[in-house]
Amino acid sequence: MQSEMPFYEGPEDALRAAVQALGGAKQVGAAIWPDKAPEAAGRLVQDCLNPSRAEKFDVTQVMFIFRKAKEVGCHAPFMWFAGDVGYDARPITKAEEADRLTTVVEQASKTLAVAVAQLERIQRGNSIKAAA
Image (cartoon, rainbow, N blue to C red; front, top):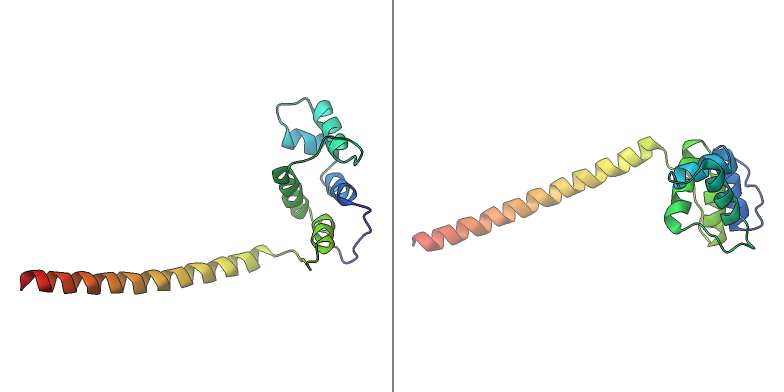
């Protein structure tokens, strides 16, 4: 994880750092717009990173860039975005995410077991009344 938070002038600057970490505009453009020629896709990425241009990434494209940047160890752009809106963010390891999901599954299993027991109790009560 990056220990020092670099200074970014704005969101485009922060995203530019992620794009650079991912191999540049052509690489990212080709991943986001596979139907475009790499040069055209790269130019579109550059346009989206230029605050004076009308072209902008949509939210799913920004999320894609953040996810891919995390895979290569580039966390600062996402952390800048979080900090800009008042959050303290840190990357979560796969082990931490697996632990969190294990807890969710265990809790859901307990909830399901309780619900099944209650349903069975209700159904037994209805069958006893029906037999009577």
